[in-house]
Amino acid sequence: MKTFEELGVAEPLRRAIEELGFEAPMPVQEKVIPHLLDSKAGDVVALAQTGTGKTAAFGLPVLQRIDPDINKPQALILSPTRELCLQIGSDLADFSKYETAVKVLPVYGGSSIESQIRSLRQGVQIIVATPGRLIDLINRGVVNLDNVRTVVLDEADEMLNMGFLDSIDEILSHIPDERKMLMFSATMPDEIAKIAKKYMQQPVEFVIGQKNEGAQNVKHVYYMVNARDKYLALKRIADDTPNIYAIIFCRTRRDTQEIADHLIQDGYNADALHGDLSQQQRDIVMKKFRDRVITMLVATDVAARGLDVDDLTHVINYGLPDDTAVYTHRSGRTGRAGKTGISVAIIHSREKGKLREIEKKIGKSFERKEVPTPQHIIEKQLYSLADRLERVKVDEEEIGKYLPGVARKLEWLSAEDLLKRVVSLEFKRLLDYYRDAPTIDFIDEKPKRERKDNDRPRNDKEKDRRTADKGMARVYVNAGKRDGFYAGNLIDMLNHTVEGKRVDVGRIDLMPGYTLFDVPQDDARRVVSGLTGAEFLGKHIYSEIADEKKDYAKASNRKSKSKNNENIFDEPAETIADYFRKKSRTNNSGKKKSRK
Ligand code: AMP
Image (cartoon, rainbow, N blue to C red; front, side, top):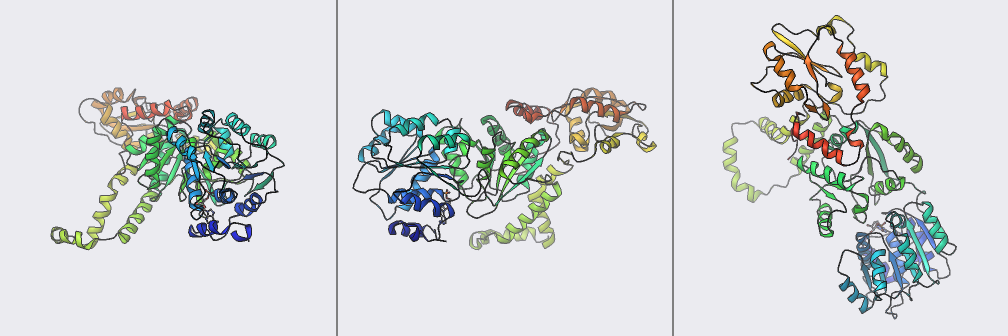
């Protein structure tokens, strides 16, 4: 492995990067730096993800190629977003700490053009720009690119995704032909090859990692649930990761806002980042995320570009993108700087094809995981609390003032009792939420016959289910365990839908596709008419006084086949809103908010 000196990096730059902790060049730097510094070498296409060290790979030679005596733009770096622009500008400033003569200016949309014009007039040597704003400045006659000798297109695939192809065309037409051009891209769609062919001279292609492959140290896992359970799965993943620091990618702005709103309502440190927010709002959200005030950022792909965070625990795909390149981008946000990352996909059964397609393209397989069980989550959280208790810094002086009084009040408790109470205090809501919580994994591996048999009464004992206890009436309701409908949900639903005095519920038999339960004979009619027409997680509830001769298993199988579980999350955004609206209207899930 070569040193930066052997690659030809000048001393003042080396001193600066050494201070930044760069000990040895990263692979992309080893390949790109000497090539860019060699005035005879041609253009470069480099396939490299963010996090591979590509900014220094082009930034160091670009800085070194600047002639300090010419006070005009000599290098142009194009980037898709304002955030990336600022990031590159700030990296170049760091690298050129001891090359103070070099002037770098980031120009981007969404910020005062006048102050950018003023800075341009004072003279700059390197412009880092978003395409739209640069064209604006060219058209106003305040930028002259005649002296540009180096052009870098960073995240070229992303610029194409954002529709900047024409802008790039126009910008390049203002730059002399005898330029060195460098294009970085995380993926290699055909359009990139076309740009290379059109604008570059015999480009050398460097591939860092493999083409279209996600970062090496990213583990890809997926959870498969019914479409309507995606949000519940997300919550469980979050609850199972006490120190979660994640970006949750959604396809639409609306989904992004909805999911974030519900996470916030449910007590998570979450927020949304998407294009409907003003630049100022986006800046605030990103700052909060960087500062970890927010630990779950729900974002669209475009809005999350340029948000540079290195130590995400998870990238979560709330559904899969259509384009594999988008998945590669998303998963490349984790597993950076030598750390291991996890890219999670929460999918429903009909997204399986897309998953296989991505596997083929990235050459890696996804591991299917079971959605964390309540027991596992609670255990994880308990250990995390124990860990925090061990590590908490006690401010002896401050706390000490109040301790004697508190100690007197609690002296009747043993140490064990005290611990139990602390834990219960912290966990009551989590325990309440997960009590009776169903398994939400989509069951696809079970042979069909086995499932049917579960529903079919095969012996007398099962027939007894249809008979009420003495003095009671048996009531049928068309929701069962398969719907995530448990005793708590039934009681909750009765409390919310049946008018008049509280109903005492007797024996409850929960079946996969339906439920039979006893109520006092006098209350039966009231119960049936209250329940019928209610909704449970989007399912229309039907109830009747149970008929001893009727085979409800068969009936419920027939119905579930024809209705085939409503897939609420399948459809575009508004249905998610509908789902939550329905849920809060009927308030029948029997689940309480779990977190502070
Ligand atoms: P980038 O791909 O340019 O976003 O870089 C990813 C991260 O790697 C940034 O935090 C850089 O500061 C860091 N980095 C770049 N080159 C090196 C190097 N040679 N040694 C250590 N860290 C580096």
